[in-house]
Length: 325
Image (cartoon, rainbow, N blue to C red; front, side, top):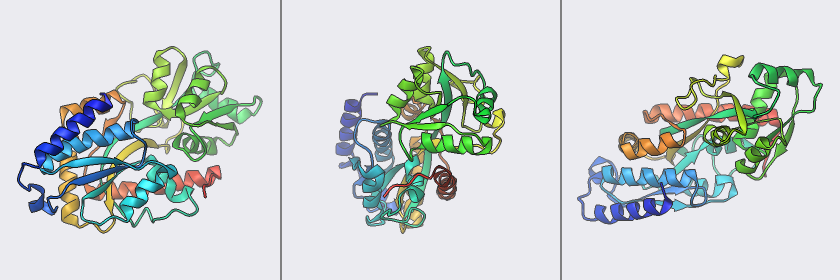
């Protein structure tokens, strides 16, 4: 799906909604336009996710829903903007995994992730994939684990950078093994995965979607993924829980969050609109092609999951020793 098409579609919906009655005003909202703040630059998966959700939510709420990209600061800039916004449901955050990681990664985070946000709904998640070069001697997770334990070879793993989910997921993987591998941080996932494919590092975790592009090109071998069940795109690839790590479960995910004091009625109205949008064939097609699995569900469950995610990633941050000012 091209960004231009989403922009045009979103504009058309926004204009059309101006002529509709205030559907949302009777459901706790005030009938004003809604802004979804995406704390990433335009053009990436998060941006596209925000735009396709904005389009569907606008149809269901009867008000314009627009995307405002506020990238930078490791997502802190956009998140802080939402945390300080009026808690009336008209300023929302497209939250992703860094939203939970940053709660413990940054020493001086300008908000309290647990208290200053209400997660309206989880939308989708994607497992991370553990992979090695296609010609690697390691053909199973067990073989890689034994090599890490033995310490006989200098093993390396690449990541998108210090404190990113691939880095922290690897540290969670290494902790119960008891062995070590040298961390090679890159400026983003693409160069990390490309160097893995070229054999410059031993193994890496990254999103299923990105790893599979190189698997399908014959350059990487998938060993396992981090989901709780086998993924329909790669049904022959086991989960890490099947591979000797029964308690391992971290994923890359997307949710919508509102300011912490947003009223229950508003949150429920937004939650219903999000869940309905997640059933839209266009949205299902987009998410499926990205390798994501649709989650949805209640606002209560979504907030409980956020708190659990914060705890999980806090453990990983402590293990890794990563820290940002």
